[in-house]
Length: 240
Image 1 (cartoon, rainbow, N blue to C red):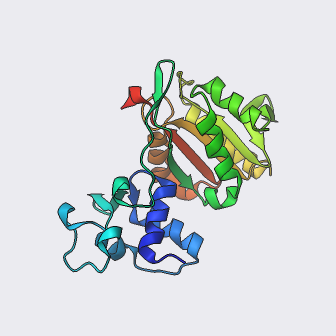
Image 2: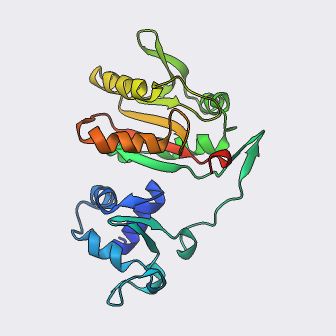
């Protein structure tokens, strides 16, 4: 069983990017059954002295691996922690360069609900040519049905065992407001009993659809949104 600091690092490794105290607390509490209560102090203690951390921190130096981005928001200093693998070199596909590890944004406990499918999906993306067609081809090669009709004339990009996948704005523009259409379709499919978890594969920022745009929408109405949703944001070099 990890200690609280190690569990916090694990949460950052899975979720990726900048995270609020509440996001980290929710992820850790789900996995470790509310074992710890105070995450604000623990995360503040994990900031190294060189970045303005607390002199009174009880966290060992090797676990002081967080950076305070703004009030209540932190990111992981990935190079500082021995369990975090070094970043892979960018991989080029034509004119698009990607950094393999996607940024994750999770809504309504999507990752625990995915179970083994979570690692399967990450491997599919890792093996794919990073284009819309390339990602769908990778899903198909992994045994996922693609272009599946689930709601009238609407066909999702991939579907298996209640996991519905959409790929948007990776290598080409998406239809205006397609993000809200996707979110609405996920909601309808869940209410029809056809969706267990929704997966949206997109870019981190820019374009008609991105992880950043999903995050902003969920900050507005996420507490009313029912479907479990996992967004995998692929950082494209042209967006950096």
